[in-house]
Image (cartoon, rainbow, N blue to C red; front, side, top):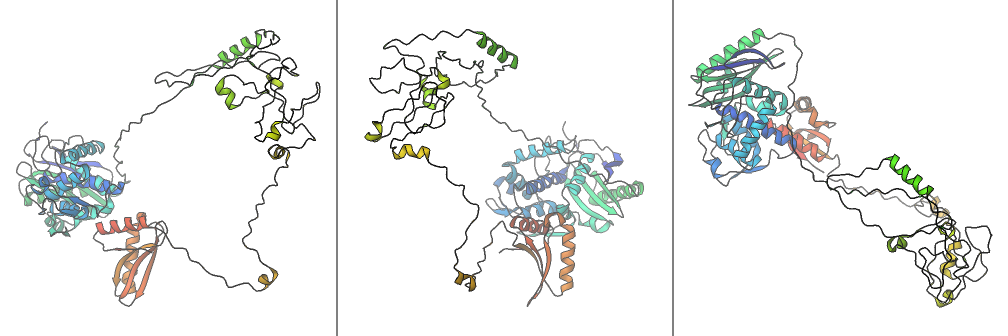
Length: 546
């Protein structure tokens, strides 16, 4: 729906609860003019709080931004200017070139920024708003309503109280010029008024979203389609008066819910699922086992093989009921599928249970490690895997290689080590060595003789240099003629910026030039955040580092 040239529209709400007090054409889609910059500033404040940009981040001025229609700050193409000055120019002077530069700097282009503005409007509950640019100049498809602008003004007050004071400044330093507030007449004439934004185009008429506080009441109202500045201000005064007269004195304050912005993230995941096979029964005595190399499991994109416990139990029972094949005596020259393990060398370990090493798993069959010419194939004392032992590596020296293997007598009890009186090479003797004693947990810092203990040497104190992560940073608010002035400013700032200051301590330093008001005991990030917030409120500050 296209915006129409302004009929009169108005909306009044109790800012404490968001309840409607008065509405006239409140949902009619009209040209918002420079009230658009309220959303531009809302997104700028959001980007600062997320850490996307800083107040001292410099934005590049494009030719498109510099060529915007008045009101303008006077930016030049190719110029770089800090975000803090752009915010002041957009909020106070309502500069179109500054607002466009903010949008391009945050989103890359004004069109992309307009899409973000519309998305944020939906997240805030603004149902009759659509943006096409960052400054509010008349464009097809660029519209809003009196209700939506009042809702946006309430979010500015509650969501960014640290920046809200900029809307009540009569003048501001915009970097290249000092600018005056377009709303200063209403701010000076209406008691309790502290914002927010004016707007005017021929198609929109004279617009204003204002906020005022009296006692414990705060009222936010919007006027669209005024005939002149005087008419608009007079109508706003009447609306606010009616709001203060209708709003209850005591009411439970309900802050607006934060915007529900959904960020979609696509994560590509590759899942590899191994094929589940039935569990085989344990090998029986004398049973022939054929071993082969299993294939690598393949990745399955859409299906996952699921094996239930009942299927596994059934497979185990079938394997156990199957009769074990008779072990045929080996024939001369015949290759067995699973050969018996050779006896161990003297001094080597003999394991009672069967084991499979990594090399056997890869090859699929256990290699025959008996010496060449050994024809005693039938003299295996304990056939089968259950009584075989892992072969040891052959020693590299010729002497150790000539040692005859020790054969355990049939029926002898299995032991962990086979004792031998034969001389053992060093590599084999290490197997029978005693385990090393556990290392003591005592740390010997220095060795001192009795003379040293009686007359200790002079100790040297070494101070460690602080790093960026330490709490050796601070923020200085400047010099004052009296200690009382410095302490008063520190206390006032601590109350206003308690969230950012954290556990920082107040300190007044008595210097030759005066009393310096400082916050100390901060880390670097906290000091930078605090100084940025103070600068946004026109409070001078300097970061102090180690």
